[in-house]
Length: 226
Image 1 (tube, helix red, strand yellow):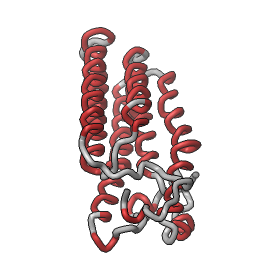
Image 2 (cartoon, one colour):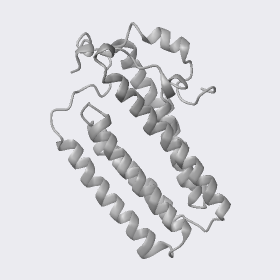
Image 3 (cartoon, helix red, strand yellow):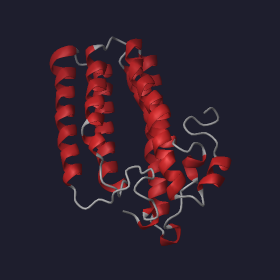
């Protein structure tokens, strides 16, 4: 457990606070991602669609996302991956990617451009916010403090919002509005489940910083909205 978490009692909230002792779960997650990505590529090029700019973009979106989440799981996150992340999360991501292939329809070049912008901006919000926090946390002077700067000053969970945006862009690239179910379900899960659970823990772990952070950044998910 991180030193700043040792004051938590057993009946108090916790959120993914176990320090990593090995890369076993990260390796399991990597293997799962490789299997899912292989099936995704097979479905794209070997079964559902013909070679096209749309198919190539969908393949690129899948590859970029899988590479990014594995870099995050191994480098950006000092904690252990939770069982939820190597079971429920990977199954959810698999269902999304399967839907994005099976329900894909042709789309115009304008649609592909819009999807690329949404995907790129969402990836930026998620990845750069995590990197900013990683660099800040690396300074011993910030040990035990809550990171409230950079993109996390826009929203307390700007990384979650970035994920929702990139999956929205990915859905647009499929050319089928039915695939909007994925970013909608993801956003609802973040807002009504993950964020309350996470912030309940953070309010205890960072008891000194949290009240000021709530005042400074009142938006839990979408900047300037909610």
